[in-house]
Each structure stands twice: as structure tokens, then as C-alpha cells.
Image (tube, rainbow, N blue to C red; front, side):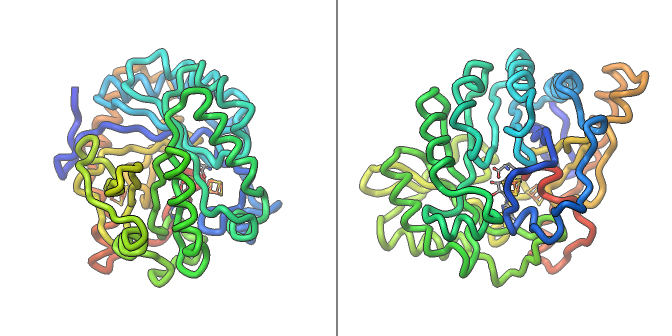
Length: 333
Ligand code: SAM
Ligand code: SF4
Ligand code: SF4
């Protein structure tokens, strides 16, 4: 079965946030001034259990979802993460992946792989401690993350690295990152800094565009575009002309890809969002904890996706933006 939205986009991916907590305070996501000791994170009772996540994922798969991605907050903070992956791996999805800051990965990678995880994306914004500490709220140096990446590769996980590039903050880290991960044999993807949530003080001037990145990297190591791995792939792919690997560019600000957006997002508390920049979610937890049977839940998700009209990044280009958006740490990017 395939469900299409109002712009004829099929529902194909589900991103599941398993916690709203994080051991980092990246300024572009959870700035310390707001996410401090006074901030009220979700109480455990409000967070979906492994059983609830499994049930809702199965229903999404019935509706055509093929790929599941676990995210957060920081998913490795969740004690039953391996159990969640084991349950999801037993379902009929094509692919299960995880996005993590990598700081707690070293001792967990092989366990996650054994539970059925196939792919992992590790977020890392620089290769020098000072820049990295400055960006993550002084929570972690580089070494634990690099060790996590090494452990994931050794465990047989397909590893990609995501870097958010911010003007004047970590631009200088772009070429060293490209060189390092090209040598390591991992694909590095550079993400344009986005105006997610309401707390990061985003300004278009802070964005380093896809084109600027391509120009800078290409002048050092010539690049050529290559075809996407599948229709609707978010990153545009480029390979090094010298044959030593590829990079990806995720350009949600300067080159929006809403027309092929097939992703639904489930927050840790069971709210369904049909756009990363959504203002309003749909409460699936209430239904999951009611007498509603699977057919009723499927019907509800079907109705939500069928009515979907979101294309925030395209609208941003037209000068329209919204207020009161959901926070990135809530729905996981
Ligand atoms: N904590 C995990 C991590 O950092 O990988 C998973 C959750 S995090 C919200 C998911 C991704 O969103 C990370 O790769 C992060 O760099 C990215 N992200 C967060 N805020 C962003 C922003 N304002 N612009 C672009 N990417 C952002
Ligand atoms: Fe935490 Fe990831 Fe957000 Fe950084 S980007 S604060 S690691 S959730
Ligand atoms: Fe999808 Fe919304 Fe991002 Fe557009 S802005 S690509 S609709 S999540």
C-alpha cells in the first residue's frame, strides 16, 4: 500500500525520536541558555515505550514506509535502545538506521549491529577540540566521537558523517573534515545550517551555501556530480575526480527538496509531524493508549498523510516563515 499527500508525495520514511534529552548542548539545536536545569524534559511516562514504538512502526510499514531512522535528542541515552532496534529489525522494513552524536557509541556499536542496525550517521562538526567544544556546549572532545566512528565501522555498520556548517563558526573545518573522512573511507555530508525550532537565533547570513561548499572543496579536490542512490535522496552526491570517494551536500535552505519529501517524524512523546518545521503535531500516543485497534490507528495516519501540504523550505524561499515551530531535539532532524 502507498499513501500519497496533497502534492503526490508517498509516505516512505519514518524518523523516530526516542528521547528529547541530550548529553550535548549544540548551540544550533539545544542552546544552553534555554535547555538548562530549569528546562522541563518529558517525564518517562510520556515517552513511547519500546512496545509502542514497535507497534506504531509496524502500522507505518503497513502504510508503505520502507525506511526507519532512530534519532533524538541523543538516542544512545535511551537504556533500552538495543531492545528497540531488535524489535524494529524484526519488522518488515528495508532499512534501519540511527543518527547519533557518537560520544557514547564506542562501547555500544557492536551490540547495536547485532540487534539488527544496518547504518549509522554520526554528527561531527569539526576536527579540532576548541571548535567542537564551542559548538557542543563544551560537552565532548573529538576523540570519543572518532572512537565511536571507528567502533561502528569495525562492527560492520555502514557509517556516514554529518557536519552542519555555520558561517564564521566551523567553516575552517570543512577542508580538514573532507580530507580526513576521504582517507578514512567514510562519506561526509555537509548540511546547511537551518532555522529549525525557535531557539537557535538563525539568520540566513550564517548559512554556508551548497554552492560555496562545492566551490571550496572542488578547488582543492575536483568533484563531479553523481546520480542519487534512490529517488528523493536528500543529499546531492559528488564524487572526487581522483576516484577517492564521494561527499554529500544537504541544501535545505538554498536548494529546497520539499517536492520529493517522503518523511514523517514521530516525537519521543508520540506526536506525529509531517514536516521538520511543523508548528502542529498529531497526538498518536493518545490513540496508542486508548482502545483504538490497529485499523483505527492506520486510518488516522492515512488521513493525516493524505491531507499533508507542507513545503516549508520552498515557502521560506518565497519569504514566508512560521513561528512556534517544534524543536529539533523534540523530533530529531
Ligand atoms: N543527537 C543526535 C545527533 O546529533 O546526531 C541526533 C539528533 S540531532 C537533532 C539530528 C541531526 O540534526 C544532527 O546531525 C544535527 O547536526 C542536525 N541539526 C540539529 N540542528 C540543526 C540545525 N539548526 N541545522 C541543521 N542541522 C541541524
Ligand atoms: Fe544533541 Fe544532536 Fe541536538 Fe547536538 S544536534 S544538541 S547532539 S540532539
Ligand atoms: Fe520535507 Fe518540510 Fe523539509 Fe520540505 S521543509 S523537505 S516538507 S521536512
